[in-house]
Length: 569
Figure 1 (cartoon, helix red, strand yellow):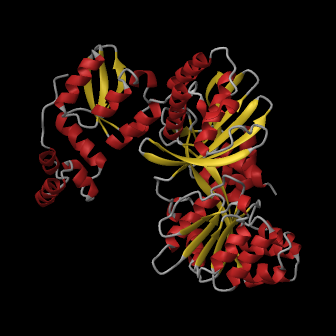
Figure 2 (cartoon, helix red, strand yellow; figure 1 turned 120 degrees about the vertical axis):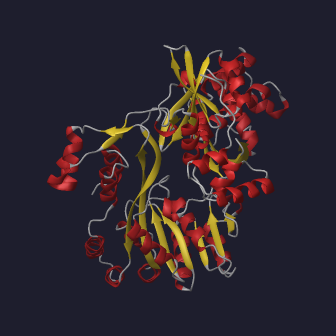
Figure 3 (cartoon, rainbow, N blue to C red; figure 1 turned 135 degrees about the horizontal axis):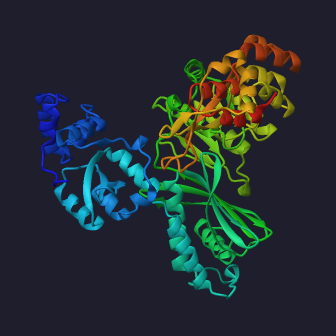
Protein backbone atom coordinates (compact mmCIF):
# COMPACT_ATOMS: atom_id res chain seq x y z
CA UNK A 1 0.00 0.00 0.00
CA UNK A 2 1.41 3.48 -0.81
CA UNK A 3 2.32 5.89 1.94
CA UNK A 4 -0.54 7.93 3.36
CA UNK A 5 -0.81 11.50 2.13
CA UNK A 6 -1.26 14.54 4.31
CA UNK A 7 -4.82 15.88 4.25
CA UNK A 8 -6.66 18.64 6.08
CA UNK A 9 -9.33 17.27 8.39
CA UNK A 10 -11.40 20.44 8.23
CA UNK A 11 -11.56 20.34 4.43
CA UNK A 12 -12.53 16.67 4.46
CA UNK A 13 -15.38 17.26 6.92
CA UNK A 14 -16.74 20.27 5.04
CA UNK A 15 -16.49 18.52 1.66
CA UNK A 16 -18.49 15.60 3.04
CA UNK A 17 -20.99 18.10 4.55
CA UNK A 18 -20.46 16.89 8.12
CA UNK A 19 -19.79 20.46 9.31
CA UNK A 20 -20.40 23.91 7.82
CA UNK A 21 -17.79 26.54 6.97
CA UNK A 22 -18.97 28.60 9.97
CA UNK A 23 -18.51 25.62 12.29
CA UNK A 24 -15.04 24.99 10.85
CA UNK A 25 -14.05 28.62 11.39
CA UNK A 26 -15.27 28.45 15.00
CA UNK A 27 -13.31 25.23 15.58
CA UNK A 28 -10.12 26.64 14.00
CA UNK A 29 -10.32 29.74 16.22
CA UNK A 30 -10.87 27.50 19.24
CA UNK A 31 -7.92 25.31 18.16
CA UNK A 32 -5.68 28.37 17.91
CA UNK A 33 -6.80 29.55 21.36
CA UNK A 34 -6.44 26.24 23.21
CA UNK A 35 -3.76 24.41 21.22
CA UNK A 36 -5.86 21.23 21.06
CA UNK A 37 -6.25 19.14 17.92
CA UNK A 38 -9.02 20.18 15.54
CA UNK A 39 -10.82 16.83 15.80
CA UNK A 40 -10.86 17.05 19.59
CA UNK A 41 -12.27 20.60 19.47
CA UNK A 42 -15.04 19.51 17.10
CA UNK A 43 -16.01 16.53 19.28
CA UNK A 44 -15.92 18.49 22.55
CA UNK A 45 -18.32 21.05 21.08
CA UNK A 46 -20.71 18.35 19.83
CA UNK A 47 -20.25 19.22 16.15
CA UNK A 48 -19.18 15.70 15.13
CA UNK A 49 -18.61 12.32 16.77
CA UNK A 50 -15.41 10.31 16.67
CA UNK A 51 -17.15 7.81 14.39
CA UNK A 52 -18.03 10.67 12.00
CA UNK A 53 -14.36 11.65 11.78
CA UNK A 54 -13.19 8.05 11.29
CA UNK A 55 -15.75 7.44 8.56
CA UNK A 56 -14.82 10.65 6.76
CA UNK A 57 -11.09 9.81 6.83
CA UNK A 58 -11.79 6.28 5.59
CA UNK A 59 -13.83 7.57 2.63
CA UNK A 60 -11.24 10.22 1.76
CA UNK A 61 -8.31 7.78 1.86
CA UNK A 62 -10.28 4.86 0.35
CA UNK A 63 -9.34 2.57 3.24
CA UNK A 64 -11.66 0.59 5.58
CA UNK A 65 -13.00 1.87 8.88
CA UNK A 66 -12.83 -0.92 11.48
CA UNK A 67 -15.15 -0.68 14.49
CA UNK A 68 -13.08 -2.38 17.19
CA UNK A 69 -16.16 -2.90 19.33
CA UNK A 70 -17.29 -5.64 16.94
CA UNK A 71 -13.89 -6.76 15.63
CA UNK A 72 -12.46 -9.85 17.31
CA UNK A 73 -8.68 -9.65 16.91
CA UNK A 74 -6.09 -12.30 17.71
CA UNK A 75 -4.06 -11.16 20.75
CA UNK A 76 -0.93 -12.86 19.38
CA UNK A 77 -1.25 -10.85 16.17
CA UNK A 78 -1.76 -7.62 18.10
CA UNK A 79 1.38 -8.30 20.14
CA UNK A 80 3.54 -8.25 17.00
CA UNK A 81 3.74 -4.55 17.86
CA UNK A 82 5.16 -3.78 21.34
CA UNK A 83 2.76 -2.04 23.71
CA UNK A 84 4.90 1.09 23.99
CA UNK A 85 4.78 1.63 20.22
CA UNK A 86 1.08 0.76 20.01
CA UNK A 87 0.35 3.50 22.55
CA UNK A 88 2.82 6.00 21.10
CA UNK A 89 1.57 5.72 17.51
CA UNK A 90 -2.07 4.92 18.40
CA UNK A 91 -1.93 1.78 16.27
CA UNK A 92 -3.03 -1.86 16.50
CA UNK A 93 -2.19 -4.85 14.29
CA UNK A 94 -5.55 -6.26 13.21
CA UNK A 95 -4.68 -9.25 11.03
CA UNK A 96 -1.99 -11.05 9.03
CA UNK A 97 -2.51 -11.19 5.28
CA UNK A 98 -0.48 -14.17 4.16
CA UNK A 99 -1.53 -13.86 0.50
CA UNK A 100 0.17 -10.46 0.22
CA UNK A 101 2.71 -10.96 3.03
CA UNK A 102 1.35 -7.85 4.73
CA UNK A 103 -0.35 -6.74 7.93
CA UNK A 104 -3.59 -4.84 8.35
CA UNK A 105 -2.87 -2.08 10.88
CA UNK A 106 -5.53 0.16 12.40
CA UNK A 107 -4.47 3.74 13.16
CA UNK A 108 -6.34 6.51 14.91
CA UNK A 109 -4.48 9.01 12.67
CA UNK A 110 -3.83 7.27 9.34
CA UNK A 111 -2.27 10.41 7.80
CA UNK A 112 0.62 10.48 10.31
CA UNK A 113 3.57 9.88 7.96
CA UNK A 114 6.17 9.60 10.74
CA UNK A 115 4.10 6.97 12.59
CA UNK A 116 3.62 5.02 9.35
CA UNK A 117 7.38 4.89 8.72
CA UNK A 118 8.13 3.84 12.30
CA UNK A 119 5.47 1.11 12.22
CA UNK A 120 6.84 -0.26 8.91
CA UNK A 121 10.32 -0.37 10.41
CA UNK A 122 9.14 -2.05 13.64
CA UNK A 123 6.92 -4.67 11.96
CA UNK A 124 9.26 -5.38 9.00
CA UNK A 125 6.22 -6.03 6.78
CA UNK A 126 4.16 -4.21 4.21
CA UNK A 127 1.33 -2.35 5.93
CA UNK A 128 -2.29 -1.99 4.82
CA UNK A 129 -3.99 0.79 6.76
CA UNK A 130 -7.43 1.00 8.36
CA UNK A 131 -9.01 3.75 10.43
CA UNK A 132 -9.98 2.97 14.04
CA UNK A 133 -11.69 4.95 16.79
CA UNK A 134 -9.01 6.22 19.22
CA UNK A 135 -11.09 5.59 22.35
CA UNK A 136 -11.89 2.01 21.31
CA UNK A 137 -8.23 1.54 20.31
CA UNK A 138 -6.93 2.48 23.76
CA UNK A 139 -9.50 0.19 25.42
CA UNK A 140 -8.37 -2.68 23.16
CA UNK A 141 -4.72 -2.03 24.03
CA UNK A 142 -5.60 -2.10 27.75
CA UNK A 143 -7.36 -5.45 27.35
CA UNK A 144 -4.81 -7.19 25.15
CA UNK A 145 -1.49 -6.11 26.61
CA UNK A 146 -2.25 -7.76 29.95
CA UNK A 147 0.53 -8.24 32.51
CA UNK A 148 0.09 -11.99 32.96
CA UNK A 149 3.49 -12.99 31.58
CA UNK A 150 5.19 -10.05 33.30
CA UNK A 151 3.65 -11.01 36.66
CA UNK A 152 4.80 -14.62 36.24
CA UNK A 153 8.32 -13.43 35.37
CA UNK A 154 8.49 -11.13 38.40
CA UNK A 155 7.22 -13.95 40.64
CA UNK A 156 10.01 -16.22 39.32
CA UNK A 157 12.54 -13.44 39.88
CA UNK A 158 11.37 -13.16 43.48
CA UNK A 159 11.62 -16.95 43.91
CA UNK A 160 15.23 -16.86 42.66
CA UNK A 161 16.00 -13.93 44.95
CA UNK A 162 14.70 -15.85 47.95
CA UNK A 163 16.50 -19.02 46.88
CA UNK A 164 16.18 -21.97 49.23
CA UNK A 165 16.55 -19.85 52.34
CA UNK A 166 13.29 -19.51 54.32
CA UNK A 167 13.39 -16.01 55.77
CA UNK A 168 11.12 -14.94 58.63
CA UNK A 169 10.02 -11.62 57.17
CA UNK A 170 7.78 -10.94 60.13
CA UNK A 171 10.74 -11.03 62.50
CA UNK A 172 13.13 -9.10 60.27
CA UNK A 173 10.55 -6.48 59.31
CA UNK A 174 11.40 -3.58 57.06
CA UNK A 175 15.11 -3.77 57.86
CA UNK A 176 15.76 -6.36 55.19
CA UNK A 177 16.08 -5.32 51.58
CA UNK A 178 15.88 -8.90 50.33
CA UNK A 179 12.41 -8.68 48.92
CA UNK A 180 12.27 -5.02 47.96
CA UNK A 181 13.06 -4.75 44.23
CA UNK A 182 11.28 -7.83 42.85
CA UNK A 183 8.37 -7.62 45.28
CA UNK A 184 7.66 -4.01 44.37
CA UNK A 185 7.76 -4.79 40.65
CA UNK A 186 5.51 -7.81 41.15
CA UNK A 187 2.89 -5.86 43.10
CA UNK A 188 3.00 -2.95 40.65
CA UNK A 189 2.27 -5.36 37.80
CA UNK A 190 -0.53 -7.07 39.74
CA UNK A 191 -2.28 -3.76 40.49
CA UNK A 192 -1.73 -2.52 36.93
CA UNK A 193 -3.24 -5.69 35.47
CA UNK A 194 -6.16 -5.63 37.91
CA UNK A 195 -7.08 -2.08 36.91
CA UNK A 196 -6.78 -2.98 33.20
CA UNK A 197 -9.08 -5.98 33.71
CA UNK A 198 -11.67 -3.91 35.67
CA UNK A 199 -11.18 -6.13 38.73
CA UNK A 200 -13.01 -5.15 41.93
CA UNK A 201 -10.94 -7.43 44.20
CA UNK A 202 -7.52 -9.11 44.26
CA UNK A 203 -7.23 -12.42 46.13
CA UNK A 204 -3.76 -13.67 47.15
CA UNK A 205 -4.27 -17.19 48.48
CA UNK A 206 -1.55 -19.60 49.71
CA UNK A 207 -2.34 -23.24 48.91
CA UNK A 208 -0.44 -26.38 49.93
CA UNK A 209 2.15 -26.19 47.14
CA UNK A 210 1.31 -23.05 45.15
CA UNK A 211 0.34 -19.43 45.68
CA UNK A 212 -2.59 -18.38 43.54
CA UNK A 213 -3.59 -14.84 42.61
CA UNK A 214 -7.17 -14.33 41.46
CA UNK A 215 -9.15 -11.29 40.28
CA UNK A 216 -12.87 -10.76 40.80
CA UNK A 217 -14.25 -9.33 37.55
CA UNK A 218 -17.97 -8.61 37.15
CA UNK A 219 -18.67 -10.58 40.33
CA UNK A 220 -16.79 -13.74 39.29
CA UNK A 221 -13.30 -14.89 40.32
CA UNK A 222 -10.73 -15.56 37.57
CA UNK A 223 -7.29 -17.11 38.10
CA UNK A 224 -4.62 -14.59 37.13
CA UNK A 225 -1.44 -16.54 37.89
CA UNK A 226 0.15 -19.15 40.13
CA UNK A 227 3.56 -18.90 41.78
CA UNK A 228 5.82 -20.69 44.23
CA UNK A 229 4.35 -20.83 47.74
CA UNK A 230 7.56 -19.48 49.30
CA UNK A 231 6.90 -15.93 48.03
CA UNK A 232 3.57 -15.78 49.91
CA UNK A 233 5.01 -14.48 53.19
CA UNK A 234 7.00 -11.72 51.48
CA UNK A 235 3.91 -10.57 49.55
CA UNK A 236 1.85 -10.46 52.76
CA UNK A 237 4.63 -8.58 54.56
CA UNK A 238 4.96 -5.94 51.86
CA UNK A 239 1.21 -5.34 51.75
CA UNK A 240 1.06 -5.09 55.55
CA UNK A 241 3.81 -2.47 55.49
CA UNK A 242 1.95 -0.50 52.82
CA UNK A 243 -1.26 -0.51 54.89
CA UNK A 244 0.32 0.13 58.30
CA UNK A 245 -0.62 -3.27 59.80
CA UNK A 246 1.31 -5.20 62.45
CA UNK A 247 3.86 -7.20 60.43
CA UNK A 248 4.74 -9.40 63.42
CA UNK A 249 1.15 -10.56 63.95
CA UNK A 250 0.35 -13.59 61.79
CA UNK A 251 -2.15 -15.35 64.05
CA UNK A 252 -5.01 -12.85 63.91
CA UNK A 253 -6.98 -11.25 61.05
CA UNK A 254 -6.16 -7.61 60.32
CA UNK A 255 -7.80 -4.86 58.26
CA UNK A 256 -6.28 -1.74 56.76
CA UNK A 257 -6.14 0.48 53.72
CA UNK A 258 -3.71 2.40 51.51
CA UNK A 259 -3.75 4.52 48.35
CA UNK A 260 -1.87 3.92 45.13
CA UNK A 261 -1.78 5.55 41.71
CA UNK A 262 -2.21 3.12 38.82
CA UNK A 263 -2.41 4.16 35.15
CA UNK A 264 -3.09 7.79 36.12
CA UNK A 265 -5.95 6.68 38.37
CA UNK A 266 -6.12 7.12 42.14
CA UNK A 267 -7.03 3.76 43.70
CA UNK A 268 -8.12 3.34 47.31
CA UNK A 269 -7.23 -0.20 48.45
CA UNK A 270 -9.00 -1.87 51.39
CA UNK A 271 -6.98 -4.84 52.62
CA UNK A 272 -7.97 -7.79 54.79
CA UNK A 273 -5.57 -10.49 55.99
CA UNK A 274 -6.59 -13.81 57.51
CA UNK A 275 -4.44 -16.69 58.81
CA UNK A 276 -5.11 -19.94 56.91
CA UNK A 277 -3.61 -23.42 57.01
CA UNK A 278 -0.80 -22.60 54.56
CA UNK A 279 -0.16 -18.94 55.33
CA UNK A 280 -1.91 -15.58 55.36
CA UNK A 281 -4.67 -15.03 52.79
CA UNK A 282 -4.85 -11.42 51.58
CA UNK A 283 -7.91 -9.89 49.88
CA UNK A 284 -7.86 -6.34 48.53
CA UNK A 285 -10.91 -4.34 47.41
CA UNK A 286 -10.04 -1.76 44.75
CA UNK A 287 -12.01 1.50 44.80
CA UNK A 288 -11.30 3.86 41.92
CA UNK A 289 -11.43 7.39 43.32
CA UNK A 290 -10.69 8.93 39.91
CA UNK A 291 -13.94 7.74 38.36
CA UNK A 292 -17.23 9.61 38.54
CA UNK A 293 -20.01 8.49 40.88
CA UNK A 294 -22.60 6.54 38.89
CA UNK A 295 -25.74 8.56 38.29
CA UNK A 296 -29.14 7.10 39.09
CA UNK A 297 -29.94 7.15 35.35
CA UNK A 298 -27.17 4.64 34.66
CA UNK A 299 -27.62 2.03 37.41
CA UNK A 300 -30.30 0.06 35.53
CA UNK A 301 -33.40 0.91 37.59
CA UNK A 302 -36.61 0.77 35.48
CA UNK A 303 -37.78 4.23 34.41
CA UNK A 304 -41.11 4.30 36.30
CA UNK A 305 -39.46 2.94 39.47
CA UNK A 306 -36.67 5.50 39.17
CA UNK A 307 -39.22 8.32 38.87
CA UNK A 308 -40.92 7.27 42.13
CA UNK A 309 -37.57 6.75 43.89
CA UNK A 310 -36.42 10.24 42.92
CA UNK A 311 -39.65 11.74 44.21
CA UNK A 312 -39.24 9.94 47.56
CA UNK A 313 -35.60 10.93 48.16
CA UNK A 314 -36.60 14.58 47.69
CA UNK A 315 -38.95 14.43 50.67
CA UNK A 316 -37.71 16.46 53.65
CA UNK A 317 -37.72 13.52 56.05
CA UNK A 318 -38.11 9.75 56.30
CA UNK A 319 -36.02 6.58 56.04
CA UNK A 320 -34.93 5.14 52.67
CA UNK A 321 -33.48 1.61 52.83
CA UNK A 322 -31.57 -0.27 50.12
CA UNK A 323 -31.19 -3.99 50.80
CA UNK A 324 -29.24 -6.89 49.39
CA UNK A 325 -26.16 -9.02 50.08
CA UNK A 326 -22.58 -7.76 50.13
CA UNK A 327 -21.45 -6.68 46.66
CA UNK A 328 -24.94 -6.11 45.26
CA UNK A 329 -24.39 -2.41 44.49
CA UNK A 330 -26.25 -0.90 47.47
CA UNK A 331 -23.61 1.76 48.11
CA UNK A 332 -23.55 2.74 44.44
CA UNK A 333 -27.32 3.33 44.49
CA UNK A 334 -27.15 5.40 47.67
CA UNK A 335 -24.26 7.49 46.37
CA UNK A 336 -26.20 8.09 43.16
CA UNK A 337 -29.02 9.44 45.34
CA UNK A 338 -26.55 11.54 47.39
CA UNK A 339 -25.08 13.04 44.21
CA UNK A 340 -28.55 14.29 43.20
CA UNK A 341 -29.26 15.70 46.67
CA UNK A 342 -25.83 17.36 46.99
CA UNK A 343 -26.56 21.07 46.56
CA UNK A 344 -25.39 24.29 48.19
CA UNK A 345 -28.73 24.50 50.01
CA UNK A 346 -28.36 21.13 51.79
CA UNK A 347 -25.95 19.73 54.37
CA UNK A 348 -25.12 16.06 53.83
CA UNK A 349 -23.33 13.82 56.34
CA UNK A 350 -22.33 10.18 55.83
CA UNK A 351 -21.38 7.68 58.54
CA UNK A 352 -19.56 4.74 56.91
CA UNK A 353 -17.26 1.80 57.56
CA UNK A 354 -15.28 2.37 55.45
CA UNK A 355 -15.77 5.51 53.33
CA UNK A 356 -15.88 3.92 49.88
CA UNK A 357 -16.20 6.95 47.61
CA UNK A 358 -15.25 10.56 48.12
CA UNK A 359 -17.97 13.03 47.22
CA UNK A 360 -17.06 16.76 47.17
CA UNK A 361 -19.29 18.89 49.36
CA UNK A 362 -20.34 15.97 51.59
CA UNK A 363 -19.13 15.56 55.20
CA UNK A 364 -17.98 11.93 55.40
CA UNK A 365 -17.12 10.21 58.68
CA UNK A 366 -15.16 6.97 59.00
CA UNK A 367 -16.35 4.65 61.81
CA UNK A 368 -13.54 3.31 64.01
CA UNK A 369 -14.62 0.66 66.54
CA UNK A 370 -11.11 0.49 68.04
CA UNK A 371 -11.57 3.93 69.61
CA UNK A 372 -15.30 3.42 70.26
CA UNK A 373 -16.26 5.59 67.28
CA UNK A 374 -19.29 3.45 66.47
CA UNK A 375 -22.16 4.03 64.07
CA UNK A 376 -24.48 4.95 66.94
CA UNK A 377 -22.03 7.38 68.52
CA UNK A 378 -21.19 9.14 65.25
CA UNK A 379 -24.86 9.26 64.29
CA UNK A 380 -25.78 10.99 67.56
CA UNK A 381 -23.10 13.62 66.95
CA UNK A 382 -24.06 13.98 63.28
CA UNK A 383 -27.61 14.92 64.23
CA UNK A 384 -26.22 17.85 66.27
CA UNK A 385 -24.46 19.13 63.12
CA UNK A 386 -27.75 20.41 61.62
CA UNK A 387 -27.83 18.01 58.62
CA UNK A 388 -30.57 17.80 56.01
CA UNK A 389 -29.56 14.34 54.74
CA UNK A 390 -27.73 11.61 56.66
CA UNK A 391 -26.36 8.42 55.08
CA UNK A 392 -25.74 5.57 57.53
CA UNK A 393 -23.55 2.90 55.91
CA UNK A 394 -25.48 0.03 57.48
CA UNK A 395 -28.21 -0.55 60.06
CA UNK A 396 -26.05 -3.03 61.97
CA UNK A 397 -27.79 -3.14 65.32
CA UNK A 398 -30.84 -2.08 67.26
CA UNK A 399 -29.27 1.12 68.62
CA UNK A 400 -28.17 2.41 65.20
CA UNK A 401 -31.55 1.55 63.66
CA UNK A 402 -33.48 3.35 66.40
CA UNK A 403 -31.34 6.49 66.26
CA UNK A 404 -31.63 6.57 62.47
CA UNK A 405 -35.40 6.15 62.58
CA UNK A 406 -35.86 8.81 65.22
CA UNK A 407 -33.78 11.14 63.04
CA UNK A 408 -36.12 10.33 60.15
CA UNK A 409 -39.07 11.34 62.34
CA UNK A 410 -37.54 14.67 63.35
CA UNK A 411 -37.02 16.35 60.01
CA UNK A 412 -34.06 14.49 58.47
CA UNK A 413 -33.86 12.33 55.38
CA UNK A 414 -31.94 9.17 56.34
CA UNK A 415 -30.47 6.80 53.73
CA UNK A 416 -29.14 3.42 54.80
CA UNK A 417 -28.67 -0.26 53.92
CA UNK A 418 -29.81 -3.51 55.49
CA UNK A 419 -28.98 -7.15 54.75
CA UNK A 420 -32.26 -8.79 53.75
CA UNK A 421 -33.25 -10.90 50.74
CA UNK A 422 -36.14 -8.79 49.44
CA UNK A 423 -38.24 -5.71 50.17
CA UNK A 424 -41.15 -7.56 51.80
CA UNK A 425 -39.02 -9.05 54.57
CA UNK A 426 -37.27 -5.75 55.42
CA UNK A 427 -39.86 -4.18 57.78
CA UNK A 428 -40.24 -7.57 59.49
CA UNK A 429 -36.45 -7.74 59.90
CA UNK A 430 -36.47 -4.33 61.59
CA UNK A 431 -39.12 -5.55 64.03
CA UNK A 432 -36.97 -8.64 64.71
CA UNK A 433 -34.14 -6.27 65.64
CA UNK A 434 -36.45 -5.03 68.45
CA UNK A 435 -37.07 -1.67 66.81
CA UNK A 436 -40.41 -0.34 68.12
CA UNK A 437 -43.31 -0.85 65.73
CA UNK A 438 -44.30 2.81 65.76
CA UNK A 439 -40.80 3.80 64.59
CA UNK A 440 -40.92 1.40 61.63
CA UNK A 441 -44.47 2.45 60.73
CA UNK A 442 -43.87 6.20 60.89
CA UNK A 443 -40.24 6.48 59.63
CA UNK A 444 -39.87 4.01 56.78
CA UNK A 445 -40.72 5.56 53.40
CA UNK A 446 -39.43 3.09 50.83
CA UNK A 447 -37.37 -0.11 50.54
CA UNK A 448 -35.37 -0.98 47.43
CA UNK A 449 -33.87 -4.47 47.02
CA UNK A 450 -31.23 -5.09 44.39
CA UNK A 451 -28.78 -7.55 42.86
CA UNK A 452 -26.24 -7.29 40.03
CA UNK A 453 -26.36 -9.38 36.85
CA UNK A 454 -23.63 -9.70 34.24
CA UNK A 455 -24.45 -8.21 30.85
CA UNK A 456 -23.87 -10.03 27.57
CA UNK A 457 -20.85 -8.68 25.68
CA UNK A 458 -22.24 -6.71 22.72
CA UNK A 459 -19.16 -7.49 20.63
CA UNK A 460 -19.76 -11.25 20.56
CA UNK A 461 -23.50 -11.58 21.28
CA UNK A 462 -25.27 -14.26 19.23
CA UNK A 463 -28.56 -16.20 19.38
CA UNK A 464 -28.64 -18.93 21.99
CA UNK A 465 -30.19 -22.40 21.98
CA UNK A 466 -31.67 -22.88 25.44
CA UNK A 467 -31.15 -25.98 27.55
CA UNK A 468 -34.24 -27.93 28.69
CA UNK A 469 -33.90 -26.65 32.26
CA UNK A 470 -33.74 -23.06 31.02
CA UNK A 471 -36.84 -23.54 28.86
CA UNK A 472 -38.77 -25.00 31.80
CA UNK A 473 -37.72 -22.15 34.07
CA UNK A 474 -38.79 -19.55 31.49
CA UNK A 475 -42.11 -21.30 30.93
CA UNK A 476 -42.81 -21.07 34.65
CA UNK A 477 -42.07 -17.33 34.52
CA UNK A 478 -43.55 -16.32 31.14
CA UNK A 479 -46.04 -19.06 30.37
CA UNK A 480 -46.53 -20.25 26.80
CA UNK A 481 -45.12 -17.02 25.34
CA UNK A 482 -41.59 -18.13 26.34
CA UNK A 483 -41.34 -20.53 23.37
CA UNK A 484 -41.75 -17.70 20.84
CA UNK A 485 -38.96 -15.52 22.24
CA UNK A 486 -35.30 -15.45 21.22
CA UNK A 487 -32.40 -15.13 23.63
CA UNK A 488 -28.70 -14.35 23.30
CA UNK A 489 -25.38 -15.18 24.90
CA UNK A 490 -21.78 -14.13 24.32
CA UNK A 491 -19.53 -16.62 22.53
CA UNK A 492 -16.43 -14.98 24.07
CA UNK A 493 -14.02 -12.53 22.44
CA UNK A 494 -11.04 -10.33 23.25
CA UNK A 495 -13.34 -7.54 24.52
CA UNK A 496 -14.71 -9.72 27.35
CA UNK A 497 -11.58 -11.89 27.87
CA UNK A 498 -13.47 -14.88 26.48
CA UNK A 499 -16.19 -14.82 29.18
CA UNK A 500 -19.12 -13.67 27.02
CA UNK A 501 -19.98 -11.01 29.62
CA UNK A 502 -18.90 -7.38 29.90
CA UNK A 503 -20.06 -5.18 32.77
CA UNK A 504 -22.99 -5.52 35.15
CA UNK A 505 -26.34 -3.85 35.67
CA UNK A 506 -28.83 -3.77 38.50
CA UNK A 507 -31.94 -5.88 39.12
CA UNK A 508 -34.46 -4.09 41.34
CA UNK A 509 -37.73 -4.27 43.23
CA UNK A 510 -39.27 -1.47 45.29
CA UNK A 511 -41.85 -1.28 48.05
CA UNK A 512 -43.30 2.11 48.94
CA UNK A 513 -44.90 2.23 52.37
CA UNK A 514 -48.56 3.08 51.88
CA UNK A 515 -51.19 3.70 54.55
CA UNK A 516 -52.36 0.07 54.38
CA UNK A 517 -48.81 -1.27 54.81
CA UNK A 518 -48.09 1.16 57.65
CA UNK A 519 -51.25 -0.01 59.39
CA UNK A 520 -50.23 -3.68 59.01
CA UNK A 521 -46.81 -2.94 60.56
CA UNK A 522 -48.41 -1.01 63.44
CA UNK A 523 -50.70 -3.95 64.21
CA UNK A 524 -47.75 -6.38 63.95
CA UNK A 525 -49.53 -8.69 61.54
CA UNK A 526 -46.66 -10.15 59.46
CA UNK A 527 -48.86 -12.43 57.32
CA UNK A 528 -51.25 -9.59 56.49
CA UNK A 529 -48.31 -7.27 55.76
CA UNK A 530 -46.66 -9.76 53.39
CA UNK A 531 -49.92 -10.31 51.51
CA UNK A 532 -50.60 -6.57 51.20
CA UNK A 533 -47.03 -5.84 50.12
CA UNK A 534 -47.07 -8.51 47.40
CA UNK A 535 -50.40 -7.19 46.14
CA UNK A 536 -49.02 -3.66 45.94
CA UNK A 537 -45.92 -4.76 44.01
CA UNK A 538 -48.09 -6.54 41.45
CA UNK A 539 -45.47 -9.14 40.55
CA UNK A 540 -42.71 -6.57 39.90
CA UNK A 541 -40.09 -8.59 41.73
CA UNK A 542 -36.35 -9.04 41.46
CA UNK A 543 -36.88 -12.30 39.58
CA UNK A 544 -39.28 -10.72 37.09
CA UNK A 545 -36.82 -7.88 36.40
CA UNK A 546 -34.03 -10.45 35.77
CA UNK A 547 -36.32 -12.28 33.32
CA UNK A 548 -37.08 -8.99 31.55
CA UNK A 549 -33.35 -8.34 31.08
CA UNK A 550 -32.91 -11.81 29.55
CA UNK A 551 -35.89 -11.24 27.23
CA UNK A 552 -34.41 -7.88 26.20
CA UNK A 553 -31.05 -9.44 25.33
CA UNK A 554 -29.17 -7.64 28.12
CA UNK A 555 -28.22 -10.83 29.94
CA UNK A 556 -28.45 -14.60 29.48
CA UNK A 557 -31.17 -16.90 30.77
CA UNK A 558 -28.59 -18.81 32.85
CA UNK A 559 -27.45 -15.55 34.48
CA UNK A 560 -31.06 -14.59 35.25
CA UNK A 561 -31.53 -18.05 36.79
CA UNK A 562 -28.32 -17.72 38.83
CA UNK A 563 -29.35 -14.38 40.30
CA UNK A 564 -32.95 -15.53 40.83
CA UNK A 565 -31.76 -18.49 42.89
CA UNK A 566 -30.59 -16.00 45.53
CA UNK A 567 -34.17 -15.02 46.29
CA UNK A 568 -36.31 -18.10 45.63
CA UNK A 569 -39.73 -18.04 47.29
